[in-house]
Image (cartoon, rainbow, N blue to C red; front, side, top):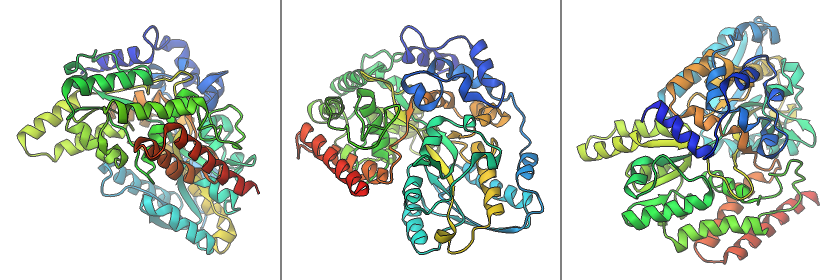
Length: 513
């Protein structure tokens, strides 16, 4: 499929009548000046959550602004922390691993080399910790006064440490930064009780992916993906009914204790008007759960209908993560799924390992027919999880001694610079610093990472997870448990939602008391 065909599909998927305005005026508003967000502030809906109006933030404007600003990172960083600065710094991060694309490892190593070159007198100790171990390892370390100076955490984790008084308060102006350089949703994720305890490093949203060939074989329009979640259900049922049980329509994820699960369920919940607490509201209080409202129950009912009634999703959805979905998609066992821009690269990498001619031919067909589009809308809104990572400085008490402030400032500055907030997240995210979207490196990414402009265009629809210390337990435990209870028919849909609401409210009240 050509780029022009892909853009045509995206046009129809955004809005059957209208997708995007002209590039000219919108692009100018995005491409000039450092204060991007205010020029495109939306007044309501999802734009108010992230600070960008979907009507002026789309593949064309994203492409038009890329490469319009040159950044001298070394000069900017040395204006922040002089080159001759000496000190010590420890940094923990869930960096690239063996499964990461080679470019991720290459750029991670280049980042460390760059830091050491810019500040040769700062002794840097880097620990690349496995993602599944970083949170617990840091909890233990901080409790025992052995936390690192600086860490880069996924967006959901920092508030727990801020609430326990383990992170230093941050003033953006001390880093030459202003609030309008970031998505409002990103700043919300580092704010606890009206104080900022970190700086966003990168932000991303996922998109909806489907297989055009399977759509065509099932008698569906391959250039008209589902616009709403109801249409997802209809398309999923049609695919399974037409092509047989070996081909399921939608790659549902409902595994317990897995972060993949809320990232794929919450967009549906928010789209219907429900929420775990009230995080989808413009001024959330995070006091009471809305997961068992009629709107929340309707979203869960849709999952039940697809899994139990229609049987149009894999029966293994109760134990599947996105790792399993990748294989199911590549072998034409599912036709639709939600995932990151890096999914295309990941499937290409898997394709390259195949040697069986029949498997290779099928996988190549899948990759050739893989299309990204916007996540479908619900009765209330279009929504997606506003994800990403943030950089934090630990307190002296958590660190077990004075944190070298100059060294920490150097690390925080470089991590959140336009260049490295982009390069450190090359395949799977976007720069948190909005200046990064205008750099030549963004232009290079758009030219080399297929579908990046589509996933990036989902950012205005992003909603952060609740910014409360209990968020990890709510998202990784209570939400998946609710899905398990409903889909396994251990409880009715209403009972499962009521049970989840009670657990969330009890969890919040424990802190409040």
